[in-house]
Image (tube, rainbow, N blue to C red; front, top):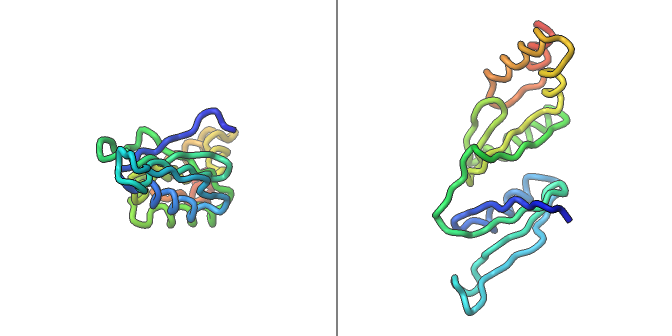
Length: 157
């Protein structure tokens, strides 16, 4: 069992959000749902916490009310092996959400994600400092990261 579990605070959409996240990722499932009983404090049957897992990472989604909302101070990085994977996650997570820069986005619930091709680290930490700088500059001009454009920038093309 993992020692630290991210808990995502939602107003009332914890179950809906968890179902959405497990639909986006292949290796994902809802592992538990806790509901209020007759004694409350909320209406009997209302979801309190949903536990779910994505790619081996356990999460909790809490219906905590409107007191807090998400911001970019916390984000989830999704390492992608291919452009196809970048495109799939980007398209799924921006559906109802919003695009930002450098591979960042907010999903329909306001949760921030970074959709990053694994090759990006190789390019910006590559042996050619000028190529690495060009790749960084290319990245800064993108919303969704495009591997071919990052590679072309690194190569000087």
